[in-house]
Length: 107
Length: 120
Figure 1 (tube, each protein chain N blue to C red):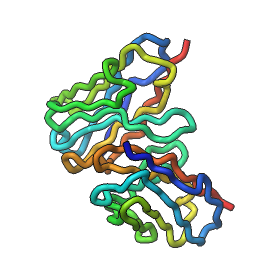
Figure 2 (figure 1 turned 45 degrees about the vertical axis):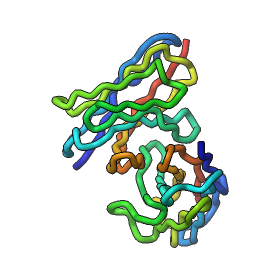
Figure 3 (figure 1 turned 180 degrees about the vertical axis):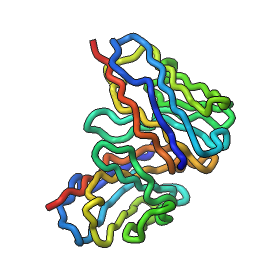
Figure 4 (figure 1 turned 120 degrees about the vertical axis):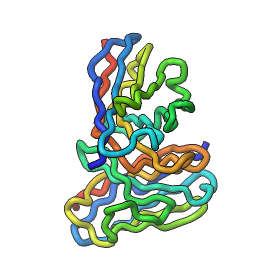
């Protein structure tokens, strides 16, 4: 089974800064079937990105996804106050594990 | 707006049973596979089960096989998760979620969750 490792565990940034989150798979992900979710405290996860780089409906364009093979990245171009949250990646090719998450916190 | 709402969580002793419900509204329920995903306190997300749009196919993570089962009632737009022989490690927030494309299990709609605590 593919294992997803997210880094860093915590990212301390200020509003307006750029956030770069990494998700590394233990083996190549078929068809780049990687999704990213945002989870704010006390809330359910929210789909941001699927197929590695396709934004879900209603997601602002400051969120972008990239990568292929085993290395995937979620970038938030300019952090808004509501973006401070935990972000999970997920592989949904031949299995569907989630990564351990990256917390983006206010510096 | 499209919505999933979970209910049925609570505190239960080890070895006992609990049934969770996931009620859908404002979308055609029987067009979608529905999943349960759980999150232990302070931990990450763990996929638990999937039920196909017609209820024919059901899949479970290894740790719940033989203990958890799902069923659909399309007349009520509701999916149920019957959890038997509960263990302390089943303690988690349980979310139901919808996948859009057959065989591609990423989740575009989630409920707010229901908390299950297994403790003596």
